[in-house]
Image 1: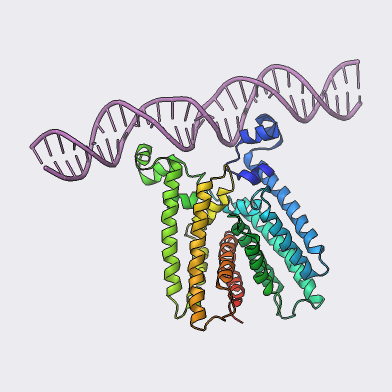
Image 2 (image 1 turned 45 degrees about the horizontal axis):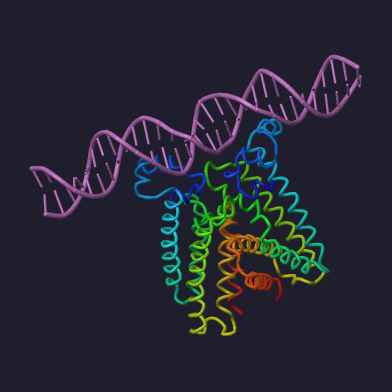
Length: 180
Length: 180
DNA sequence: ACAATTATTGAACGATTGATCAATAACTGA
DNA sequence: TCAGTTATTGATCAATCGTTCAATAATTGT
């Protein structure tokens, strides 16, 4: 997972995997049908971990909206961390996916993953409405969509390593839509 | 440019270029030092055209803010167009760039390109302030940054081909930050 | 402890990668 | 028109790509 994450699908050769994992190609093909299925397994693992990470962030605040604030704080930490692997595997895959032959199955699965993340935010927003933290007339689904567009934008924006204050101002503007 | 755009750097082989351009490899290497420089030339061309396209959109409205609305309208048209090449070459490159060996020169140039686009929006926002369309206390630089995060997010979000109405609601929420 | 199953190994497969080069064709200015 | 420059051609380079396989080693259940 980490190797695909770092180098992308196309630039991750079996040889690179073999070297870094200290596993011979034959072992990889013994465990997985081919490179694509090995990648899909890595993507599934990434999805599970990211879902867990989002849940944890959303629950770490004193309230639903505070949880969302926490999430964005964590996101900026990740983006700003020099040593971390750049970007998000799901986003990188979505970009790389447009290339080459369109992989229908992978496209669909990736769409499901994205929507699952969006639903996590939607639930938090519904909870915020229930507790009176978020105005009743707001549309949780539309807001969740808006926030996730922001997440993807921030991740891409962070690729060129801007100062953290710039990203923080973007987050403030994003979250301002929740209030009022 | 179009071929790199469609397939990405890694998946665009010299042979593919040779086939689709009906030019033999030798001809390509006669005109360009290597694959990377050929790609950089393609990227420069894309940047020039995109800058022109943005300028045109921003000037097509009755006012600066209307110009920005026009831009987002065009953006949604592009994203929704099935026949169009998916995504944005600059964004795709930024994503692919994180992979493999970090290309310092390319990273810097790409950063300049993104900032140039951001400045185009900033100018429009300054003009909007001058004409009283945008509140004086707003920060044009911060707003431009926010809008471009939105653009990248929308482009990525559009990769999975959502209904246009969903994207339109995101654009409305983005633009709502300009008013009030 | 031993037979049966599973993993690992190292070598190799054909195909494709980016890149080169002498030979040939096409164009150029005077 | 013809010498001089530029472009195109087709073949080929070593390196790497994803993948396979028989042979060997390690692990398992009984």
